[in-house]
Length: 193
Image: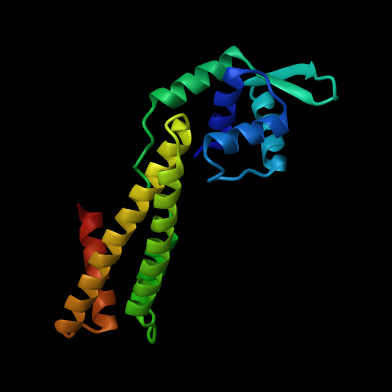
């Protein structure tokens, strides 16, 4: 998630200072993505530099208040209207780990898959418990939980797929070197398309 746009969206509701923004951000996302207050103030400085927020003075306790500018409102509207791009896939640590495990001699790839499946199923159970306790009045947190549940379910399905591919490769007598060569051939085919 873009912290920049998230903070702008919060400032569109009302002017706030950094600690308020951090608390509102974490409240909106169920603290799934905790923010460092330094990160909030650094982002606010950049937003101010870019003309998207401006100082609104100080509150009674001396906190510097920020408010969104018309340019900031336009950026928030554009952010909400623009789909999240899927052109460049994000770096997925698990996919990288499994790709490396398949190509590095001596790694028990099945054990790597099993350890991840156990951890992902545990996380899925935790998310499901949290979902059962969520109330209808906390729609933002419920949507975040839904996303986490669906991501975990998809990861388990993908791990099942990986395990089946590994079993098929072992059954066909494909060694790690042959797997590496097959991957390279498939990558070359993808580049040509």
